[in-house]
Image (tube, rainbow, N blue to C red; front, side, top):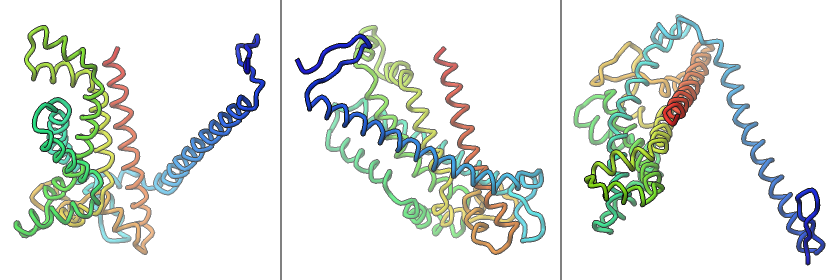
Length: 293
């Protein structure tokens, strides 16, 4: 025999093939550890730079004052509120649409396969489409006909980026639900919509929620679509029908400025976006974990 058990619980090989397999296993494991450490170092280096350059701007004035010309002690209140409004509207518009499309693709495969393949192809196309093209599309169909930029146009552009992410994750998570759960619910006399809503979606809620979070994380830092739709606003504006400020656009405008106070606010805005996404993920994960108990 080429391998014999030893008292330590491991198998000792005597042949050259056993030595080769152990060597390949150690090399592969070492490469995996090296890749993990490299990614963690990159992540912590980004967080370190954000905290080092942005923590100085976390003052009360940053959250209560609107953006002002350089040297006048402005803040980011209008940009923060504009980002919250536009991303919130984008998720409210895009998440239900993506959820319904994902349910259709996962649960109604018995219908016309060509149409399902077309819907899936369009969803995958939107998933890989550059965000600037989405902004130009909304610019042509919303901004040009209305004759002005608006926060609603920005929310519509962001919602188009939300939809394909939610579609993909919803479809994948529903396909992981065992068929026996559907059959058991149908055998008890439950109609199909109840099976989907109270059995399939309930079983896949963690994955669906993760997909919505991924979509929220993607649109929270998008700049290009907002440049063509909501444009930005130096004043306080919470009306979706008017141009609206946002953190990504403000960071884009301030980061390349020659003024130190604007550059510092750009770093603070980047830190706020990162911290916001991190807190949302932690809160939802804790909530989902509590619900499982």
